[in-house]
Image (tube, helix red, strand yellow):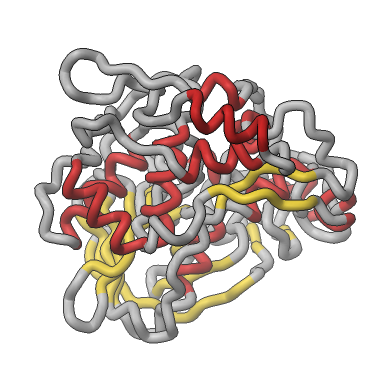
Length: 367
């Protein structure tokens, strides 16, 4: 997917400011000063200081970092926000793509984590929330950032042309809709936005194997088959919540839920089955949108398939929960009625469901 990338050198991330209210200013972190930069200069590994800057990032001494809904598209990635996003993802309270920015998906993930841990549900990372997050995610013992060496497969693919959402061209791709370039592939592998991956690795040529790149470790605690007893899809919050057999909230994922023109279902439905690495069939006999004159089209499996890496089928015809080729847009754009999630979140949820569990659609989507 073609995107306009904005690059921020990592050295710009090491500032700490207080806006006078005891809160971290938007786009800035707490304790990320010159000491980590000095250790980087003395380290035999040139990326060690960059890794430490993220792994040791803390909120301000007052213990509060606000999470506003609209930080602005040009806000620079912040080490503390990167760390908080990764720790939330590890506990299955996903912010979607790790991007180092304050935003709605992060605010909702924080609020869901607070709800599950009997904390005030305000969407703000206060001192108690931060300590609970560290404890739940083993955040003090498992580093958030790491250095990864690009392999030949990372650099060489296979890749496919970017044909956007043109179903006719998608169906014609001989090997299916693969990633379009190494940056997209590596970003997806480590659950990062392409902007953040580029920002943390200024000057790196991702087409050359052996390059050492800074990435994050956001691998979530795995769900076992049957762990999920029921699912709620909150249309107004654009999110998916999974509950265990004891009724407790065990996972939260941001989602894109329908649109005004093509709304998602209402009421309660059931999971029929799960298909990993699915193909996608466009059938004009069942759908009222798309290239109807082209007739029935089948798009081969691939991570950039219109339904991504997994399809969780519902007993509402043509509806399901599924992955996406554009993880950066989750929670920000409309869908054709289904529930879109990042590929990794959809895979994680699918691993814990069994046919027959209920999926309840709550409320209505705003806008």
